[in-house]
Image (cartoon, one colour):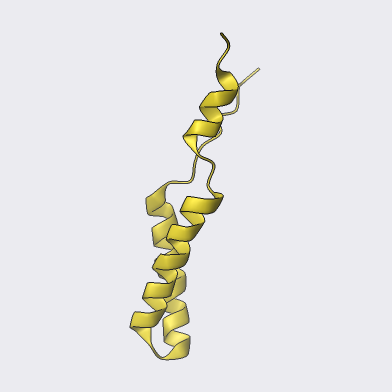
Length: 64
C-alpha cells in the first residue's frame, strides 16, 4: 500500500492566494492597497493557524 504523506500548505501558495483575493477585494472596495494588505494578513493567519505543522506529523511516527 502507498503511504499518504501529510503535506503542509506552503507559505508561498497561501500568500499568492491571499494576494489574489486581496486584489479582487481592493478593486471592489476601490482601495487597492487596503485589499492587498487584508489579503496578505488573511493568508498569513491561515498559514499560521490552520495549516498542519510538521511537529504534529513527526510526533505520531516516533516509536521508542
